[in-house]
Amino acid sequence: MWWKETVIYQIYPRSFQDSNGDGIGDLEGIRQRLPYLKDLGVGAIWLSPFYKSPMKDFGYDVADYCDVDPIFGTLEDFDRLLREAHALGLKVLIDLVPNHTSDQHPWFLESRSSRDNPKRDWYIWKDPGPDGGPPNNWQSFFGGPAWTLDEHTGQYYLHQFLPEQPDLNWRNPAVREAIYEAMRFWLRRGVDGFRVDVLWLLAEDLLFRDEPGNPDWRPGMWDRGRHLHLFTEDQPETYAYVREMRYVLDEFSQPGQERVMVGEIYLPYPQLVRYYQAGCHLPFNFHLIFRGLTDWRPENIARIVEEYESLLTPWDWPNWVLGNHDQPRLASRLGEAQAWVAAMLLFTLRGTPTWYYGDELALPNGEIPPDRIQDPAALRQKGRLGEHGLPPGRDPERTPMPWDTSPYAGFSTVEPWLPLNPDWPVRNAAAQEKDPKSMLHLVKHLLRLRQDPDLLHGRYRTHQAANGLYAYFRGEGFLIALNFTDREKALDLPQEGRVVLSTHLDREEAVGNTLRLRPDEGVVVRLG
Ligand code: TEU
Ligand code: CA
Image (tube, rainbow, N blue to C red):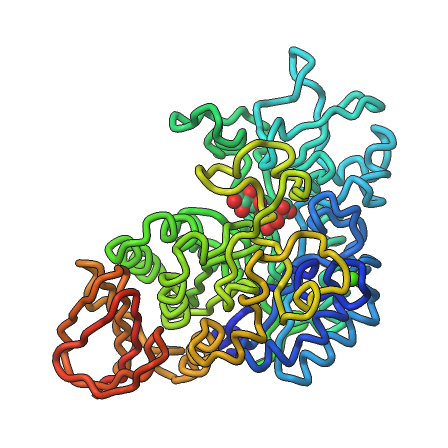
């Protein structure tokens, strides 16, 4: 099945390629860069939202599920992009944002117009609490209460994110059918599936109970962390909604042409894997992001991999992620040398990897002057979403793709919406293309190598996870050895083999019973 053998490349449309000189990336820009993606060797692209939107959360506030925002182009531009991607053999996933709409969506404008409007029940309205304040203690992801009072009708509406992103009422079958119709609109156009935004937040507790306090919360942490989310996350009803979405996808699926659902789900493994059973093809596994990159040691990474592998049934296909538009850049979290090692890890684990645009250049976090901050999450709450010592908000990981040394790095002809990485004159795709020892070339080599059936489908088995070294087998044919340190290491091999790829891109050679690894080196060994 294609989605088990592909690599998904995430594009943040605002930041990939501007084609009309307004400093903001667009669909036509992405189309022009398809050859780059084909040459890189990825098999699918996922586009973050490009729907009509007031852009309060840069497209995650949708005002029309069935149209393209003029900033990004037109429906014709989309169709052309899809057609050309398919002609190159690239699948296209788009971002579905079913949990909430924009407050400017016609559904919400109707819903808020009066208490007896037929669309009132499409959103979640509640009377004020006994003290006249919000109905309960639920907090938004972006700071402050998850409730905003609508003066005109005297009730509060729920929003897990910005007040400009009211939550839809998923218990209402008419709401569900409206979202499924939007899915069909894009499936008929030919999209290969959806990355579904905040899939684990679709339902909330029907009794609207207060959430219990989080004993680990300290002042200065994000508001959302004040409570344990027993009533706003991962409610049992959600599984039924996931199943219904899967039925919609299956209406349009044929063998070899499955339309797939990739679910954004930040949950511990035991809860995460239940989404497989509900029908989600790939519930995003973010554990390397939130437990791995924060504690980058072989013992820890091996535990993250083994726990996951042990919970999957033969029907569940694994997947791995190292970065996205909500998380600091990989290269800034690990340092460039270990980012290369992490790339080798991601592309040689069992399962479908998702790669964030620019990470193939080891793009660092952008430096955002205070007067150029764009991310609403950063503007609403100081510090980062829950983490310490990291840059404010999500702009640093959303800076424009540096293509070459022409003005504005070939991204645009004017100053881009976010600043380029300061080192763009040397760190750009064209420069790395010319340098056979660049990270770009490492990624290309890894993507070609992983076409081998053992790397695609062979089972995973840990060989060693100690002393700064992490080594594992894939199938019968491969051993991957990763040096997490900046010191030389040696590893005993169970059998002889051949180094077929080093992260240093400078050796291919036979190895006997001892494998020597240089500082920050990872290697793929073909056994036998
Ligand atoms: O993200 C949901 C989400 O949980 C993150 O914003 C989370 O708060 C952050 O990763 C913590 O570091 C999705 C989208 O990916 C995000 O861009 C949107 O802002 C959000 O939903 C609302 O649609
Ligand atoms: Ca543009």
